[in-house]
Length: 472
Ligand code: SAM
Image (cartoon, rainbow, N blue to C red; front, top):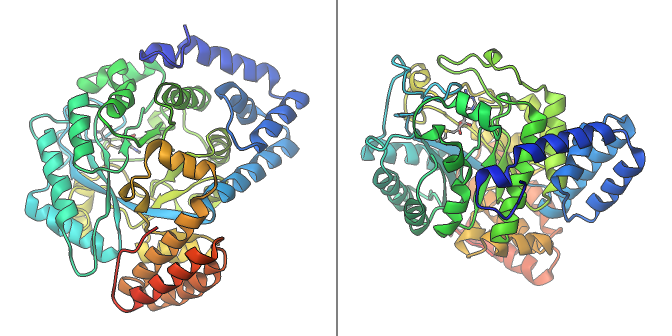
């Protein structure tokens, strides 16, 4: 029985409710009156239910689809402005006891190089990331209680926050590790993590069990209920995601939104972010072996419909996607992207030829961070290295209410400009610097409150004189 308030995976991601939703959308996908009603509701910017959003996803009336894309773009502008937050993944260890059939870190893969960063290697990786200009990391690790116990992860977080190299600093560490216990989530919270990210991979229980034949990750309920344990452990910001390609995208879309509804119903706050990874070629993984790959057009529609359904949730697209794809998708609601990423353990320091040995998947967008930052500005966005919200205690529902009241512009825009300024001075190429300085000058005028603008201008001058880390 479907119950968003239930704490049982199979009740808040109810298989029958997903199937009913798919049938309902199939019947009504060309019902113009209903689509117009749903679009009117979406324009209120308070989100949509999974059933309503499913109809928009399935709709194949060209004029209505244009409206859907335009609305997604507008909602993104209203809530997130033209800012894109930058981050990089940092792979700590690829030791893994699981048997995930899409991931080259699966335990049976005997020829992939297994690596775990030592403390010295970690310092070198973080220093390299700081020298690129990154301030926000997502740490990644396989699941292995012997090689990567929680103590190892916690020690790494402590080291990462402690490294201060030149003007560099990692100010927010997000964590993408396997589902764990409330006690461990509490420890991660106490270590000062930003978002806890865990991809569901697929919400379809039967497929999930086949795709995770062995290891602790096989347990569908334990994995699906992880975000509730994370929140019980004190983590306010959680990031959902589906690995598109594993199961039928319509099923995943409905279930993903049901998961968001569950978090809202139980904890009073929805997911902080949603990631939309697509399966990629990797060491012994051939993406064509999975039947449910989606093309760029469907991918764009998914992103647009997620944006409309959960307007306050950040959306992340990684370097799994090419420059061309990111350029197509970004407008429909993406708020965070990675840049200059390496998906191998030690990849930021090691020479390229070694890089592939422990890689998790092929990166499609291989540009440097400087190139990504410049490109963003050229296509009309402000790259932001801001990490202020969680450092100012604006997490969970406090962040959401800032976003809902659209006060985000008085806070996030100046923060974006100040952190961009730091990046330009400390790390950017002359060409990027030039474009960035112009952009900052123009964008200062878009800060709504005079008082805030004045403080931001003063801070920008202070940054020129060598001071760092200002924030609202
Ligand atoms: N081991 C942790 C877990 O089980 O959640 C951490 C996750 S892993 C380092 C990060 C994510 O990469 C996975 O959740 C999965 O969705 C994704 N991934 C794995 N193999 C992939 C592939 N071949 N292509 C694209 N993404 C992949």
